[in-house]
Length: 113
Image (cartoon, rainbow, N blue to C red; front, side):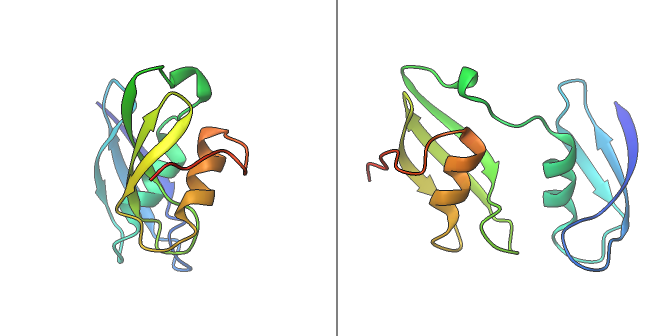
């Protein structure tokens, strides 16, 4: 376990956060935020992003933080190869674009619902 001190970027308050990160670089605990966006901000700043090399030919489920709007919803994305088949937890319609960008997929890549 490692403790990091960062500034929250979830809203305009920029609260000082104390973040606990485990051996796998996953955020386990966040303290010091005054809004619900502290955990999302900490994960965006400290956890590694998903890359195309992590995509497999079989079905896989990834959890990402949407950056489409200021809500920064935690979204579960189901992938089949390099195609998005399902998105759960999106609070706005901009999630598809945000997820495509984070995964490094082209803007015109298919989204098969």
